[in-house]
Image 1 (cartoon, rainbow, N blue to C red):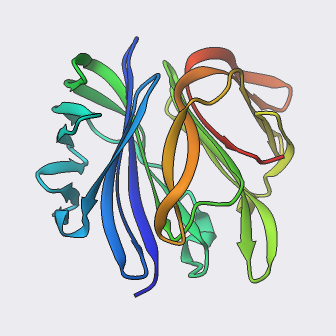
Image 2: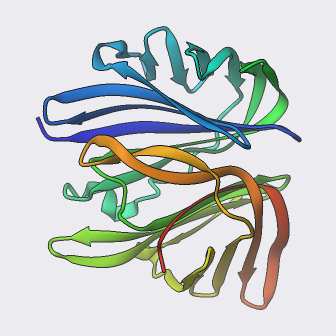
Length: 281
């Protein structure tokens, strides 16, 4: 079998707490396994499991008795470094109108395919993380996924939820048949309306430097600017093996601006942004 990875990224955010949970399964040669990563505002943990622990129940994925899916998360992990337990319940999901990868979703040779399962949904429940309670009551959630064999060598990714909606944006170096291009996928949910920016729709990265991303597509312009250093280390796949270390801030300071022609749809600073930035200049 070919090398591969498959993982889901769940982010839950209240007014003062942010918790991201990433269950994944991966294979490299004869090495198979699965894992759960947990990220809070200041810390990140990775817990490995045998491949036999991974299974499905309907549309949900499970690692042992831990369960992840459309209705929520049931989790209990007890290790010397991480003690987390609790349950989160999700309200109705808000998926995109069509696959974020567009026509690229059918290409068999991409090293990584991205999916957005829900731009925004209600989260209720609680998690206890190393003795600290993460209470989510009418909180907001975001859910995406990745599959393939490797994360891009260089990329930037950001996600932010805010009262009127949410956004996600990724810019990555994409290798195809011996050459490379800069791929862009992004979505903005604003007051119930979906805007999409993507390479396959003509989007261009006019600035990618120092944690600043500026994307132009026709009369649309989206800017995302990281205002602090990313913090928590994460494990990421390289040819199916979770040996690469990347860094993410799941709740950090950032600036966003979205324009349509001369009209600014929104412009704000926040301390609730998620950002990964891996040497893309």
